[in-house]
Length: 131
Image (cartoon, rainbow, N blue to C red):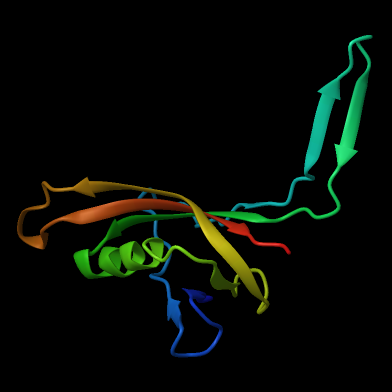
């Protein structure tokens, strides 16, 4: 299984290997990548439309995990608390390091698991930082 890294630098000490993506429904994992064009659309007074095509189009990655342990969730939460850009490598796609920011971080605790304790479902969206 290919590894995914996220951290404050591209070095071994600054990048953390994220937990393996896992789904409980038995389907193969997917990592949707949004690479849509950035376009500003305006309607003029005469009813015509004008489009402003941006020169740069950042990518977005939507990552999801089910049943993260408390320790795995703590690592993910610590990454979310960094209020700066991070470096991301998705080896499912390629080995390129990209500068990203966490745009969305949503989790749900699952507490009725008996002896296994609390687990978490997590979804996170990363957006590429282009300068």
